[in-house]
Image (cartoon, rainbow, N blue to C red; front, side, top):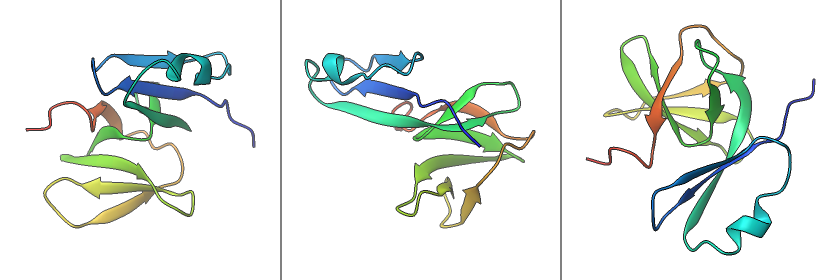
Length: 106
């Protein structure tokens, strides 16, 4: 199985989000931006067809989860307000992207 390699970069200074949809490296751009956070596309989409990236906040069955890439390459879902951890391996039709870990840090 192959997947499209895409990245999202968030500027730590301005908060602007930049996407790379054409498999072209963002490195030329990122070298000029201080404090950029780079997140990779998981190859998965949510129930609305939205790409799921590392660092996204997902909503599923009444709970919010933060998606973190695990060292082994698996994607961990950390339930907000809990120490529960689940793994995301494939697309499921009940997950929805509702933001990312850089937004709403209250």
